[in-house]
Length: 241
Image (cartoon, rainbow, N blue to C red; front, side, top):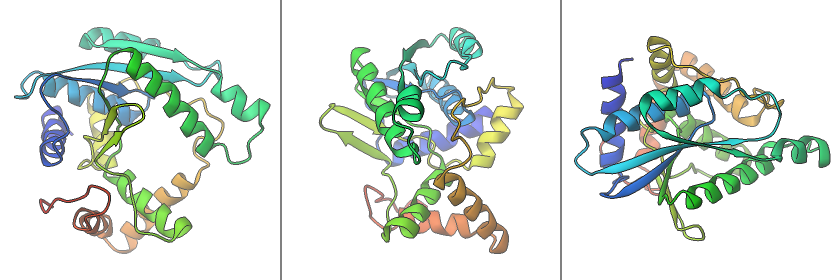
C-alpha cells in the first residue's frame, strides 16, 4: 500500500470521528512494531497538509527486558524530524520475575499505559494516538463476545478524565494486510517485541479465529466491522461505512 492510500484511510477516520483539533499536541505510542510505525508515518505525512494544525511526538515505553534495540527507531525519528522519547521501566521484571504472572498481559497493559500516560503529560501532550487497525477492532469484539458475553469493542475516541488526555485511533479503517503492505513497500525498520508472551495470548487466538472465519466466509470481517460502526456502542456512531 502506498503512503497516499494510508493517508486517505487515516484522514477519513480522523474526519469521521473528529479526532484532531487545531493546536493539538499528539503523542504517538511507538512499540517498534509495524502498526505503530505505520501510524507515525501517517500522522507525520498528514501534518503537512491537514487543515487543522497539530504537532506530534513519539514515545516508547521500554519494559526493561534488556534486549530492545531502538537504534533504527531513533534514526527514523531523526529522518522524520519527530521528537522521540524512551521511557525506561522495570515492568518486565515485575511481571515475570517478581510476580511470576501466569496471565501477564492485562497487568502489563495497565502498567505500560500508566507509564505512557505519565510521559504524555510530562511532554505537554493533550492526546495520544494508538495504532489499532480494523482487525484489532473486530478481534476485540470477538474477545468480548467469547470471554465477557457482551457486544463491545474500544472506542475511536476516548477521553481519560483522570489524566485529562484523549486517546485517538486514526488507523481504524485500515486492514492489517494493508499495514503489512505499507511496511514492506517502504522498508520500514520494525523492531521485534522482546516480551516472552508475544504470540501466545488470547488476542493471538482471536486473530487466528478471525482469519479462519474470513477464509470460510469471505467478507465476514467487513460485515462485522460494519455491524460495529452501526451499533452505536462506545462512540461508534457513524453511518459512513
